[in-house]
Amino acid sequence: MEIVGDGVIIGAGIAGLATAVALKRVGVQALILEKSDTLRSTGAALTLFPNAWLALDALGVSDKLTSLYTPFSKGSITDVATGAVQEVLYTGNGGKAQGPILVHRKALLEALAKELPADSIRFSSKFTAIEQQELGDVSIVLLHLKDGTTTKSKVLVGCDGVNSAVAKWLGLSAPIHSGQAAVRGLAVFPQGLGFKKEVAQFVDVGKRAAFVPLTDKELYWALACLEGESMARDPGLIQKEVIENHAKDFPPEYLDVVRHADLSNLTWAPLMFRHPWNVIFGNLSKGNITLAGNAIHPMTPDLAQGGCSALEDAVVLGRHIGNSFIKNGGLLVPENMAPATDGYVKERKWRAAMLITGSYLSGWVQQVGSKWWKKFLRDTLYGFVMPRLSNVVAYDCGTFPSVSASSDQRHNREI
Ligand SMILES: Cc1cc2nc3c(=O)[nH]c(=O)nc-3n(C[C@H](O)[C@H](O)[C@H](O)COP(=O)(O)OP(=O)(O)OC[C@H]3O[C@@H](n4cnc5c(N)ncnc54)[C@H](O)[C@@H]3O)c2cc1C
Image (spheres, rainbow, N blue to C red):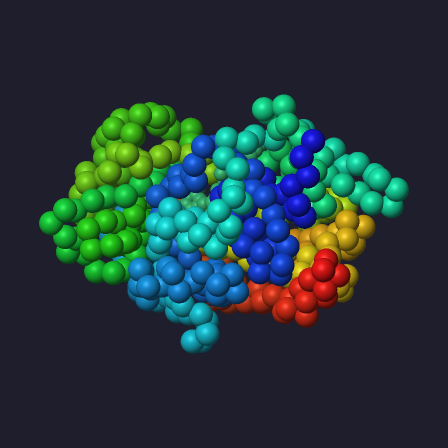
C-alpha cells in the first residue's frame, strides 16, 4: 500500500485539475489519478463566462489565458425557418470579471496542470474500488487501482466526469439522456477567417447550432440535435451527415464552416444531465469523500456552464478544506474533513441544481417549434428567464483563506 499524502483526486479534467490547484493554494498536497495516458481535450474548445474568470483569478491562472484569447461582446440568434435574427449582447460582471471568452480546452487544461508540481498527475491509473477505513476516530480512504496497487489518503474528490463511479458509490442515480446529442469541433481557414468576433447561433425545431471565431484562422462550431436521428461515428461521415441532413437548411455561412471542419478533433456525444432534485437531496459527500464537476452536475450545454461551474466547485471546495487546514494549525485532520465536505456541498448544491435547470430550460425555449402557444410560452419564458441568467453567469464564488500563518505553524512543528 502506498500513502500518497493528504488528498487524492480522481480525474484530470477541468474539475480535477482545478481542484488540485485549489488545494495547492491552501497548502494541501493532492495526487490526481487519471485513467487516460494524457490530458483529454475532447470537445476542442469551450466558452468561459465571467464566473469562470473569477474562479480562474482565484486559482491564479486567468492571466495565462487572457493573454492568448479575447472576449466577445456580441452575438446573434438566427431562426432558420423564418430567417429572423435576434441580437445578443454579452458583458462581464460590471467590470470585475472578463466577458465570455472562447478558449482551446487543451490550453485551459495545460494552464491548470502547469500550476501543479511535476509528479501531481499519475496517468494510466484507473481506480476500481473505494473503501473508507476507520482507524480509531480517524477515517482514511483506500483506493484500489486497476493495476492492483492501493493508495491511502485523508480526503478523496471524485472528478471522474459524467459517468462518475464515485457518484455511484455515494448512491447518486445515473445521469439521464436529454434526448439530444451534439457534434463539436474546429474549422480551419488557412487564409484567415473573414468572420466578425461574434457568436453566431442558429435555431430550428429540435436543432441548435453555433460557430465562434477562436483564433485568426480557427473557428469553434457545434450542432445539437435529437439523438433519435441517426449519426455516424466516423468524423468524415459525421461531417457529411451534418451538411447533407441535420444542417441542410441552415444558412450557407454555417455550412461553409462545417465544410472546413478539422476532422482530427470532430466528436459526437450524447447530452446527459442529472435530475436537479438528485443533486439537492442526494449524497454529494460521505465523510472525507466528495465530488466536483460533471460528477455532481452533468448538464446540457445550453448555458455553457458545465466547465465554468466545475471551476467554481474547485474554489469553494478548496476554501472549505483550507479553512479546516488553518483551524488545525496547518494539518489536514481526517476527522475534520466531514464538516468541510458538508459545508462545501451545502454551498454548492442549490447553485448546481439551478444551473442544470437553467441550462435545460434555455435549450428548450430556443427549440420549441412553431405552434403559437409554444412560441407564446417561449417568449414569456425568454423574457423572464434570460435576464436573470445573466446574473447567474456572473456569479462570484469567492477566494481562498490565507494559509501563510498555518504553514508557519506546520513548519515549526515539523522542525
Ligand atoms: C457539446 C458540449 C459543449 C460544451 N460547452 C461548454 C462551454 O462552452 N463552457 C463550459 O463551461 N462547459 C461546456 N461544456 C461542459 C464541459 O465540457 C464539462 O462540464 C466539463 O468538461 C466537465 O469537466 P470534468 O472535469 O467534470 O469532467 P471530464 O472532462 O469528463 O473529466 C473527467 C476525467 O476523469 C477521468 N476518469 C473517469 N473515470 C476515471 C477512473 N475510474 N479513474 C481515473 N480517471 C477517470 C476521465 O478520463 C477524464 O479525464 C460542454 C459540454 C458539451 C457536451
